[in-house]
Image (cartoon, rainbow, N blue to C red; front, side):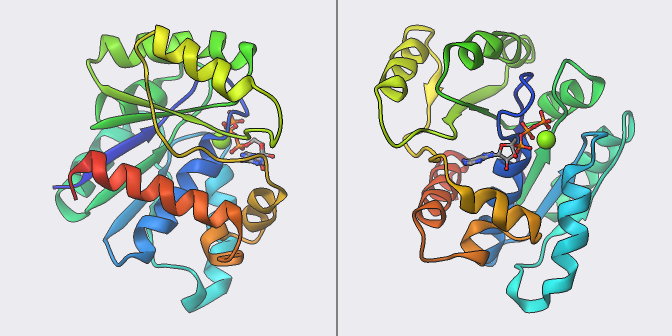
Length: 211
Ligand SMILES: Nc1ncnc2c1ncn2[C@@H]1O[C@H](COP(=O)(O)OP(=O)(O)OP(=O)(O)O)[C@@H](O)[C@H]1O
Ligand SMILES: [Mg+2]
């Protein structure tokens, strides 16, 4: 049975698609059967995957699909039996797809940038995950190289009793560069800090999945 991760955050632009693509590719590179589902009508990952097809062996094999609306649940049921990990990218705002994805997930992975606005906007996602009784882990994304915001937001999450993953992702141009090419940073630029961060994220998710 697959471990299903819904990457969800109602705030737009928090890094859901970036995190979903990089996590899926890093897990797949280790040889596991991994499916990536784009449930966002914006179809960022559909475009990413179209680019990805051009890379052949450089890109770890992923099962990819973009089910819409009510089809998400059915796709998930089928993949749960066939795959080791299923990673779902979800739309911003409380759209049906995000609810269905969270309902079907073993883990809600909630990226947020270390800023007050992102923290406040996270409330809706926290409520949704709690209402569905899903395990949730927050992931700090686009962490600036300097300043104390990371520690401050980490303390605020702790006060809310939200589990924060140890690894975080820095604010690095390599993420957009790799995404444009249809790759993960671990594939496009494996010897970078960004790639090391994604590897650490994949390890943390494997540990939560007990694999
Ligand atoms: N760690 C990072 N470092 C630098 N840029 C990043 C990082 N993570 C995401 N970005 C950039 O931030 C922007 C938003 O990221 P992304 O599209 O992944 O967010 P999203 O939550 O999926 O957005 P939406 O809510 O619109 O679906 C993109 O331009 C992306 O390249
Ligand atoms: Mg997105």
